Length: 397
Image 1 (cartoon, rainbow, N blue to C red):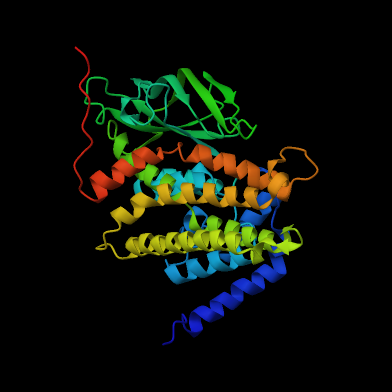
Image 2: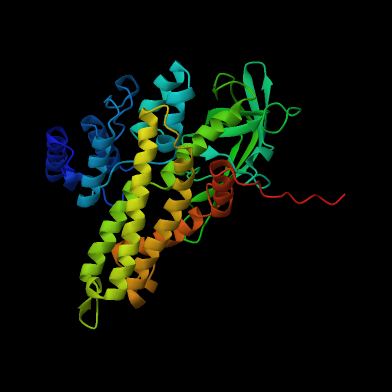
């Protein structure tokens, strides 16, 4: 039985390998989103079709037709070489695919190219102090005043708000409509007067989140995606892309390769950890979960080409599967490192600049963020497996 992809795809794999040999050294290491080397690398990847591959050229992408196997080959080769796959974030991973589906032509032409090139950073205005898991209960409001929206309210857990140029934000524009019907999806600049950002330091020691306050923030009325009052539909499209990005199997494969290499170099009593049957068994369990995750990703990718294919259940498990797997993977690396695994920050004994520790804590947060694992399990059971809905406790009268 021949399980190879065939000559066309083997030639493409060779092209990717050649690119990585010739240019992989330019891949940025631990550089910020705005660092010149990050922006230059992103532009090079787009020019060669290794990111933004299927985004049309008129919007700044490479313009290739969708091809699941080529996408998988790119992911495999970049992971094996442990080379940076380019910029991500809420604008590139979540908003851009939503604009391609639902945005106006003017919005696509204005916003997609600078976003995928890393020149325009976005944050997401969704959660509020009283609207997290029940997001549709949000109270941030927008009132139309002539040709402008006037926004007032508060968002919380606003990732990268302190760096962002723009925000995509859910607001209530129809206060008398049912809560899922009265929401609109607005886009506006973060330097607009009336916006205040207060950093929130998480357990990694970094302000990855923020509180964001809006006081009489004014923006043009055409900076809306979809129709007024129909923002919940747009929001759900974004949430689907968010769950996909939080459970990215390509990044997980890269971390698995790094973990395997770590086990080949770390020793206990002169024995490599890769040769220890207990740790090797744990690694194989992680490898099996990564393999399952990547096959599930193929199911999701193929559904985008085969419109009649139902991959709803496959999409539902991505975030749950991905964040819990990454947390376990990063935790195994800490176990392997022994007492060195407890080092953190500027401790001279840390490995990989402390990335194992920071990613371990970061993914513990993501098990909660973007929809808790408990909420995800309810979604899977009720919407994916058609099980009875969780009973609601009646409020005291």
